[in-house]
Image (tube, rainbow, N blue to C red; front, side, top):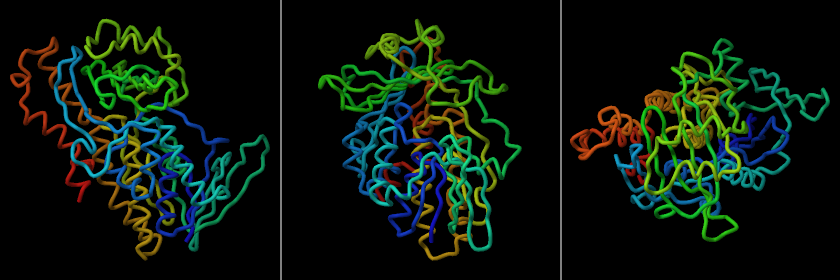
Length: 415
C-alpha cells in the first residue's frame, strides 16, 4: 500500500511518520518551495504528545520546547479565575509542550526525512488535479520552479492535509466559500525576555472584548537568563457577518499603531506589562480568527481529508495541531487493520469526524476560555470574591468538560 500526502505541515508529516510506523509507504507533496519554520507559539496537549512520544520524538521535543507547568485564566485585572497544573505536573504520563509552530513542524520534518527518505518528500509541488479510480488514485502537480512542467503520480490512496485552503476539500465542496471569520483579529509575536513566574506557565487574561495570551516556548536563546516568550492578543473587531479583512497568512506583519490602542489601559497584570512586551517585539504578525463549517463527509473512495483540511478550528483550547496529530495516528492504525482502503478511510472518518465537529463548535463558543467571559460578564470591574460570581463547580464544568470532549483528561491519556 502506498499513500500520497498533500501538505507538508504538522498534519502531513505526522501522517507520514504514523504510516511509516505501521509499514505503509508514502510520499509527501508540499506546494512551498522549501519547508520553513513559520508561525509563532502553540501548545501541544498530552494526548497528542503521547502519540509523538510513541513515534520516538519526545527527546527532540524536549530540546526545542518547554514543558508547560500550569495554566492560569485571569480577568484583565490579573485576578485569577481558574488555575490548574498541566502535563506531568498534573500527573500525566507525558508532558504538555509550549513550542514554536515552526519548531514542531521542523521536528516532524527531520524525522520524516530520516525515516521515509528525502526522495519521498517533494517541495514546490502544487496539486492541480486528481482522480480516484477503481485501482488507485492519480495526482497531477505543477512544479513551482518557474516552468509550466507538471508531474503525475499514482498510488493507492490520497490524504489531503493541505490546510484551511485545501484544494482537495474545495474540489468536493466547491460552494463552501471563504473561511468564516468571527470578527476577532489575532496579533501574535515572540521576543526574548526574562522568565515569568516559574518559566513554564501559560497565562490567558482578559474578557469578551480582548484577551492576552502569554507563555514561553523555548530556552534556546543567546542569553541563558532569558527565554523566547510567546504572546498573542485577540480583539473583537467585527460581528462575524463580514469576510475577513485579509486572507489568513502567518507571514502578514502586524502594526503597532493598529494593535496598541486595543491593549493600552486595558490590561493590568502584575506579572508582566503587555504593552512593554509588545513594544519590545521586533516583528509580530496579524491573523484573522477563522474556521470553516464542519463537513458531513471527509472520505470519497480512496481520498480523505485530515487536519485543517478536514476540521479547521479557532485557535482556542490548544487543539488545532493536536487534533491533526490524533487524526494521523487513527488513520494509520485503521489502514493497517487489514480492511479495504475504502472501508478503512470510512472507518477513520466515522471515528474522527464527530469529535472534531464538536470541538469546532465548542471553540466557536470560546472553548475553555469561556470561564473568563462568564466572570467578566458578571463582574466587568473585577471581584472581591470569585465564588460569589461563579462557583467552582460551574467553572470546572467549562474547563473539564472541554478537556474531556477533546480527549485530554488525565484518565483518557494515561489509560
